[in-house]
Length: 320
Image (cartoon, one colour):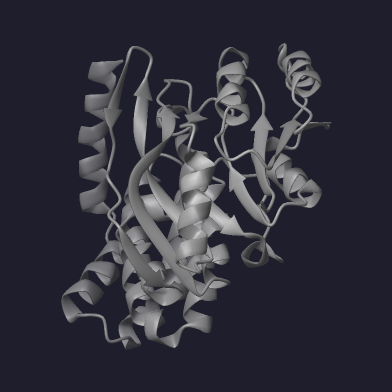
């Protein structure tokens, strides 16, 4: 039985950690290394972590100065000794055959990454989320899926061969972690398999980053601007056949980010500067003229956007 390392960053959701760790120590696949990184959590997390480590010797607890979730995951990656890597968030939990099904599928298909479906998990009920269909992809095919399927970038519904994570780390200092990381791992892979089994329970809580978007809106816009441009540059440089699709996706997103950033002057200017940077490339590309026109118009026009944003501001005030 080859070892599977499971990395869990820990900060600020004390009420959920025990449930998460219980779901891991009760896995049907037993050769696990459960790396819990306490990111200087201010609550009772450190104590809970240490109590679980005393209870189950497969749990390794690392206490560190606060670096954020990305920094905690990087610490876990450095400490991991398993042949395969999984990531689990400390407020989520997984089904008892989570590791076994992922690992068996990976070995049976000689894959580098396996992706499973998952369920939303509300306080009083569980409900299905977006089902992921059974399929097999090359890395180029899966990278193309990133342009239309947001679940591709998630890290906690996947198992990775250790080799595909060589030289891949999380970029620290962002609200968004997955998007800066997962596509780079896919670029190191040759075969990705997706399965429809719902093996993860994704807790839906109002204080979570994705559900408290308004509170972090400007930072999230900045993160998306950075990872979208970084991803375009890296993917299009390595895979020429994806350049047109990724540029098309980038120009669509830049138009949207310009609109969303209107209330944040500095961020809005950053988006406009980025649009100017890619303006010539978009015009010279084989993207349809209709989309080129939309991009040029989106870059040049502010008056219509001002009017639309005034209406949006009125709507916001009504709901305050």
